[in-house]
Amino acid sequence: MDQTEKQLDKKERAKERREKRRQEISLLRSIPYSGNQRWWSAETIAVVTGANRGIGFEITHQLASQGITVILTSREVAVGEESAKVLQEGGLDVGFHQLDIVDDESISSFCGWVKEHYGGIDILINNAGVNHNIGSDNSVEAAETVINTNYYGTKKMIKAAIPLMRPSAQGARIVTVSSRLGRLNGKRNRISDDGLRQRLEDIDNLSEELIDATLTKFLEQVKDGTLTSGGWPQTNTDYSLSKLVVNAFTRVMVKQLSNRPESEKIYINCYCPGMVKTAMTGWAGQVTPEEGADTAIWLSLLPDQAVSGKFFAERSEIHF
Ligand code: NDP
Image (cartoon, rainbow, N blue to C red; front, side, top):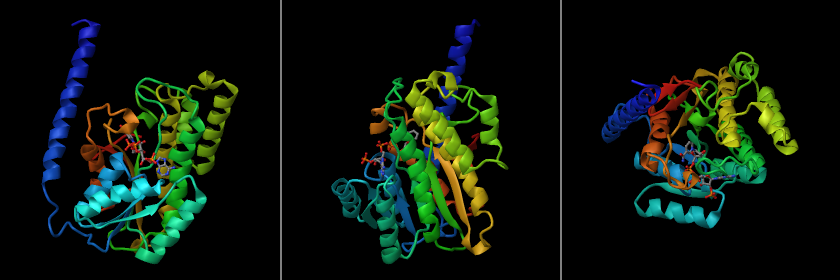
């Protein structure tokens, strides 16, 4: 077998593995949670960011279909209300509130409203995100918006929600929609500076300061045109880096949350939904929004949630 044939063979096998996993998950999704697995009720409150469309809308739909009260949030009021109405008309317990994760006032007013109307949050899904490149485009023109939304917005939302997360025997849950494109040690598309990669992987010394310094350097290089010498991810550069730091932040948060009392535990994880047919990908990809939402639902509802600070895809742990 020559090199090209070997590569084709490898691709073919990877495709088969993916298809097999899709079928397994489709079967798993058809099995309802049993009574003793269902720790949640209509009193359980979930919040989904960027839920007016795509994966966020579907996560809202699936959580609400499990009998949870879900707050669909959207930065545009009219659009969000319309999306919530679709689910409400289907008989689901879905509320709506405006929420723009890059806007401090919006976050603060949302949190005040949740506290007043629902008393707190049990599940937070950080889904809101942007990618200004489709397909093989790789412009960094919108790098600042991408980093601000995907990383700083998500981080702000998590920090604002933590004081609202309710104590429970099962623990509150935070799930962030990330991407394999942000893998630290993937074979392709990784940061080429070994030292920086090692520092970003060293959990004991990983910090918000290191993440900030990495992003500051990246954005400076975007501005002064020296980006290509930086060794940043080659595909969807700004987006990949934004997801890489979201993953790193997940691990930083585990450390910050680790000393909470047993009754006030908060578990935080992130996952990659696969390449999902949504506006973000120009409706390309092999995965439907229903399938893309699945691991978020699975992680949110794990009956025995001892897992925290991990990265998942298709209901399995993967490497950061
Ligand atoms: P969409 O573009 O369909 O949805 C993105 C959502 O995020 C929209 O509701 C959008 O609102 C919202 N959003 C953007 N910025 C903000 C903000 N500042 N505040 C609040 N909401 C905001 O894409 P997807 O559904 O595909 O993406 C959802 C998540 O999944 C993203 O985090 C994405 O990075 C991630 N992901 C997607 C993959 C895919 O293949 N589709 C693969 C891996 C990860 P609006 O409608 O107002 O723009």
